[in-house]
Length: 456
Image (spheres, rainbow, N blue to C red):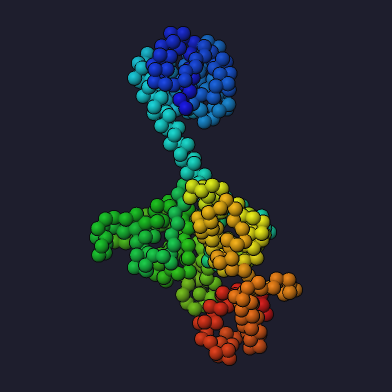
């Protein structure tokens, strides 16, 4: 569709001279002789670009620009004037104009200005679309009570500069919480830098976090800016902080205490203004007792601790999560929108999501890709989704296993819980009595979600 150009100018000669080159290039052209007439045309025509004269009788261009920006903030406005000056151009830019050209101007100047403005508008639209897509991928979905508690904590923590420690099992969505804190903070326009401390080899993590100078170690062929410097004025998210070495912990503590970093191979300190959010699936108090995590760093990080609940504690969020992921992946994989039947949603609601939201997300993506029909039903799930074999309290008889595999899982879980109770939840003793290695028993406990807290 051709771009729509609107000119507001009291000079009939300018209005007529612009028509031929614009229409020849395929643009739709409309002109108005006064600011009042032009404002009405904006509401009627919805132009893509507005050319606005500054010197006009009655309402002048600068006053009209202010009103137009209230009416349509996103409309690109190019100011024109025969009496151009730097001060006038600066004033117009401050009020929201995207460009300023002086009369008289030739057709080539006019067309170049239009192409530049349209390119800028296209880039802005693409950036908005990309931003919306990123936000959709990192959206927290659900209305359960436990998730509302997390949202309340986010709202309290976000406007501050306090460090936040996110606690919870793997796959519960700690990264989403970190991004939500950043997005709702005063630093939201600055960078969000994510570092997975467990994924970076020990010999490289200091260089990644703090940077290095050229030649500071073998292989350092170029200077590298560290993640803390990259996040200056913004937020750094240190995921899996419990896997960080003692040496690196000491340097992170220094950043938190002094607000400065030192690149490897440099004696110069660099001031940084960074908001730190950390996350772990480990019990850091136990790591402190074992001597693998610094207590002073723990207290620095956990100014605001937020526990992100596992999916089994927010089962009512599963149906909306499934619908959200189905919509997301249908768009990403260029598929027609696919719908889960209510029976399929009920089946997934009862399933055991050991990997939490991450596992649910990956399962929905697999189903979207592998199911050829527009509707996904229970039969599509049976070989992919595993039912939760842990019965709810007082609900043992309600959900009888429907397959041999489900029966075996229910029976094995019940047997393990019984033996653990007999031996006061002593893992080593129980493993010895039932004739299985302790490591295997730990795997079974994780597989079936068995814990003393829930099953004692």
